[in-house]
Length: 322
Image 1 (tube, helix red, strand yellow):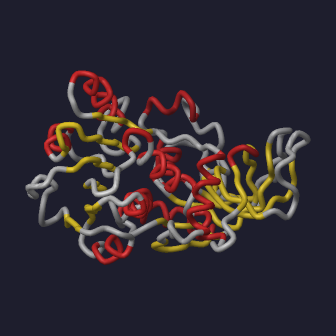
Image 2 (spheres, one colour):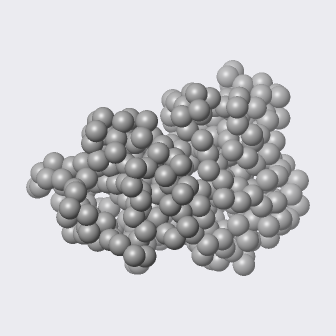
Image 3 (tube, rainbow, N blue to C red):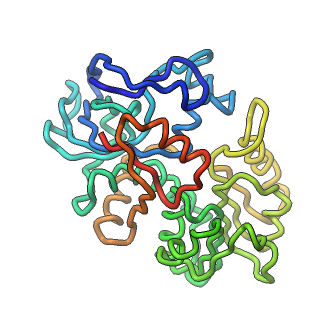
């Protein structure tokens, strides 16, 4: 089968389209014939091995799994001996490690039936980013009707879902994005839009009950100054920063500070859960969540897709078609 393979950590220049053996599913796994795969920050982290602390899981000197890709959608080709939830021919979406390939293995509990109203490309854009947004706006950070929510990075993969979810909960949503993203963000449910090239989140006299920060560039003092005294800040992922912990250091500082102040500061590293995938399926089929896709690339152009992710400020998700 054809796959995008990487032998060492580094830039997109190291990604190669190769013929490799088709994977064989373990007892608790499903073999998926991949039709489309999502491209998000998680793929960049896998490719670069950064922040360096992540290599304890990804592989110390080189990737444990040389095939790139993290989420996808497709049809079940085969199932392991202990899998009872799926059968060959089922259309699925979810966490398919190594999804930049014609076939990928996936844990059965990290897959769900594909939303019936979505294409494979749309479904592939949903798992990681959709689950991250869902988990970011859950528990103590779930907004109440009428509360003010600020979504930073509102035109990106996670941000486009966060805006839709916050609007669904009845919040007054303000989205922060770059030039050209305002129409998209408003169409997803934002009442107000801040162009970060011409204004700052602290310019408004209003303070926000919930802030979801997907961009990783603003300091904790700046974010806290835009938050109500009892508000909740959710820092998503580990973007930005340098050193061993990279952008994760800001989130760690937030967690350590949170018990000593009135504000609730969270650092979110999302995890794949079947119940969340089923929730996303339900929301998509009801028309509440709609994947926003910036561009689709064929498998052979996966390096170009990742370069676009790094430099192009995509509006919505990028997708690889297989």
